[in-house]
Amino acid sequence: MIELTDLVKRYPSRHGDVTVLDHVNLTVMPGDKIGIIGRNGSGKSTLIRLISGAEEPTSGHIMRTMSVSWPLAFGGAFQYSLTGLDNLRFICRIYGTSTEDKIPFVQEFSELGRYLREPVKSYSAGMMMRLAFAISMVIEFDCYLIDEVLAVGDQRFHEKCHHELFEKRKDRAIILVSHFADQVRAHCNKIYVLNNRRMIKFDDVDQAYHFYETQN
Image 1 (cartoon, one colour):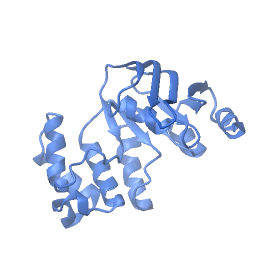
Image 2 (tube, one colour; image 1 turned 120 degrees about the vertical axis):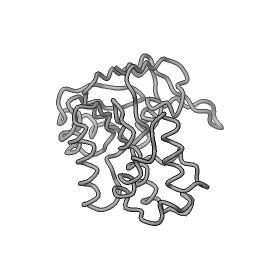
Image 3 (cartoon, one colour; image 1 turned 180 degrees about the horizontal axis):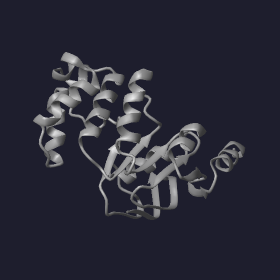
């Protein structure tokens, strides 16, 4: 289970603290498929980073009794002077798992070819996202965090990502942030709108999007 209780996140600015999330509450059970929609700047990516542990809340509490991924295709944790392969080894050490048996999958899935053995700082944004997604799939998690569905590569690559995440791992929990109703409808059974720094739950995707589209 993941439980967010009265979560508050503020950032300092030149004009004082800015509140991005204000007493947000959310419970994610094993196997839940949570869709979160909201306008740009509403705090969706901040919420994902807080759930992943990449950032700490200003106040409130996050309880995690199941393992949680980093945001899929997020390369912010890479060591840019290391090669893609060395980054894989580094991440595997952090998670206490073997590396050598995972190299073939990352090589094939990321489609980086010889660049897997080049420094990550030489990668394009798309190459880095493909590497990050491939590494995300070799470390098994109970809950996967998806910030804007898999805008990585071409349609064929999208289909590979879909198979790995939504078919092979269909028993896992997901938290999906997206602007697109069809993606939320296809993958989620619980829908929230992040509006005015608060989370609002809806039982129906169309109701959620009607509310979303009528807000300023």
